[in-house]
Amino acid sequence: MTDKAKRISANKRKGKSVGAALLNIPYMVWAMIFIIVPMFIVAFYAFTDADGAFTLENFKQLGEYRDNIADSFIYAFIATVITLLLAYPFAYFVTKCKESTQKIIMMLVMVPLWMNLLILTYSIMNIIEANGIINNFLQMLGLERLQMINTPGAVILGMIYNYFPYMVLPLVSVMSKIDNSLLEAASDLGSNAVSRFVRVILPLSVPGIVSGVTMVFVPSVSTFYISQKLGGSSVNMIGDIIESLINKVATRHVGAMLALVLMVIILVCIMLMNRFSDDDEGGMIV
Image 1 (cartoon, rainbow, N blue to C red):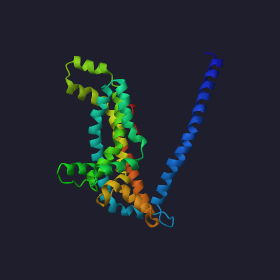
Image 2: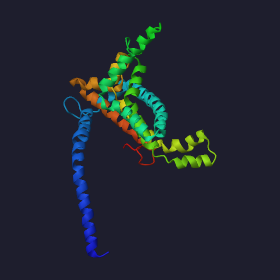
Image 3: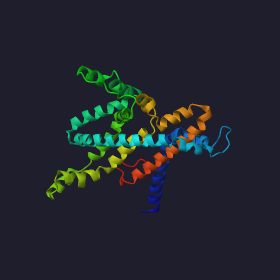
Image 4: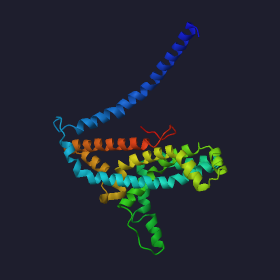
């Protein structure tokens, strides 16, 4: 290659890099305003007192809320596991349908994503409340009404109902890319249905599982609206505590401390889950 050709190639690469940098500017500005700046504000309040002086006193109150943090992670874990168990076979079934059927099913799955969380949560309330659809049906059958609302089970049900699409979408995306020739080869080598699932399908769908688990677990562990409406006073998750503390000037710094601790714990959990994903098929979040 001549020197002139090299210069032309270098100028083209430079022009592309400058263009890419210009296209990234709006995203960087958005990230700075709505992600980085709020994180610094939370960190500032967490490490300061009402007078703005540096202190670690806020973190000494962390032990008072360890039960709420533990309950939040337990409920989020249960909801994530159940959602995965429901979404995995459903996603596999979708990938085996013909293309036109897949489009219809995926559209139905995505419909709840177009609705507000408040509407979805109220719909669950109408189903499981004392005078809800389920209890009215039980009464028609001559059975006793069930106490479903204002219980931990109702909160977990609300998480599953609201975040189910976030588990299905990455699973379908990954499973649809599994080459059928791999399954045929496994069959030719003597693998039965269980062996094909364990040795081929499950390992190849790990990125989708990691992505789905992350997308369900993170909002579940930090939720507060779902627990307020479906759990009542019987369930007090860490998101509820943070909201109540942040809304009061006197306890705002403690609320910021809890928010910072929760954010760090969630980031650690995401990093640990990402270690199980070894490609870029949708499993990596951070």
